[in-house]
Length: 112
Image (cartoon, rainbow, N blue to C red; front, side, top):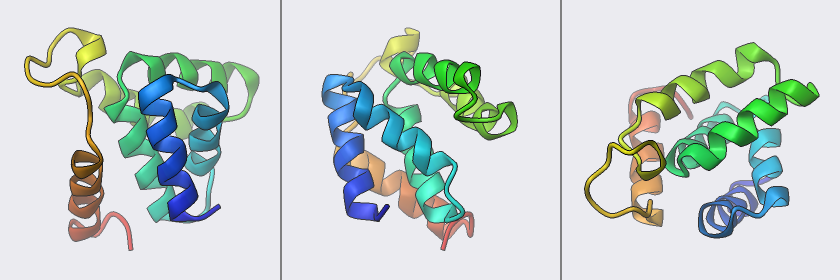
């Protein structure tokens, strides 16, 4: 899996909730590449409660361990996003917001 494909899946997931795109993000959380893991987590968190359901399904099905899912779930629950009734600005996470979040992770040394 490469970054471009993952970003495309993220856009589809955010815009349409297409299950196959969401499951590709779940697969990226399992990656040995910390950059792909971080990118998938940012997109999932940015997608709101839809992602919470997907993460729960992934744990129930054994696609993710609890240890793999919990950090993303916690970030999602703490996020200021439309599906959780907290965010007051735009209800859509833009590509620019996603890119900014990934760059923050990269600059913080969380990803390469």
